[in-house]
Length: 81
Image (cartoon, rainbow, N blue to C red; front, side, top):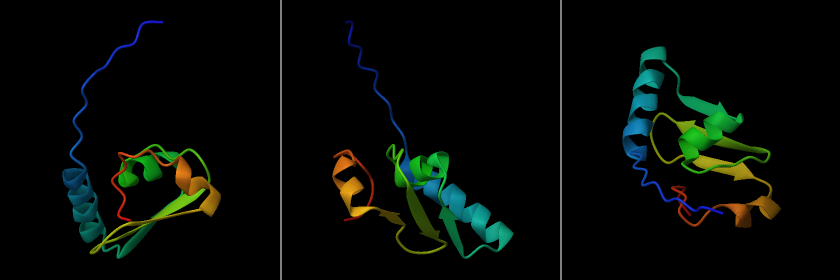
């Protein structure tokens, strides 16, 4: 099996600022995402199981999931403790 390592640079803070700017334009105070793409895009890590992310216009984002799923998060995730 051939293993390849490709460096990937993703600026999560820039991503979150863009989402918040759009929320401001649309006058949205809080976004609740439950789809795979929303979770991955906002949380900064792949979360394929049943979860939700609460993303306010200001302040920290919050990911909600079953307690049994929490240990499956990768160590390099961008979620606050």
